[in-house]
Length: 244
Image (cartoon, rainbow, N blue to C red):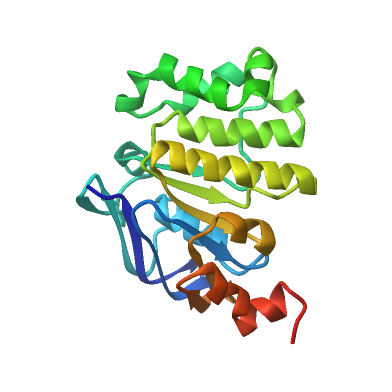
């Protein structure tokens, strides 16, 4: 039974401002798919469409969870999370005045995850030993790297099948970006996740992605079947590699 995500011909925006125009992307079972694009090109809006925070003006968004298809458009964010889709948002969006442990507990919101809070927290502390050391510390007093660890761990507390990650490298030093990307790859393999990741850092994203898309001005400028195709794309070479 597979876990996949299919976005077909989605257009969306805010009021009279159109941000996405006819966007189609797909993440197959067990894949890591990267959405490349600089700020303002629609990556976060697409993530918000998938999670029910923005309702598209047209198009379809379908998630397959354990082999069962679900139309996400029209569902609330709560219902989408309850299906097994978690988001690590841009900017982390932690509860700064709550402790590490309290933030993690709130991540186990959906009913099936509540039954496994203790086991899930033990897993997160095993994967991120620094969080175990900081379990009673307020989230807002942690470093940027520690907060990103916590944001990722909080999403895992919901026991997701599909994990959405929006700009994990923002605000982190290069060495921390590399460690975070490696950790995402490790978790994807260990938990059998399907991952869709929005990212500006091409070289880091390319290390773990199976394939990807480039968004330019709210449209898919290039769809690649492999990382090699991405690297050889004129769009990627111009925007990210300084060639052409």
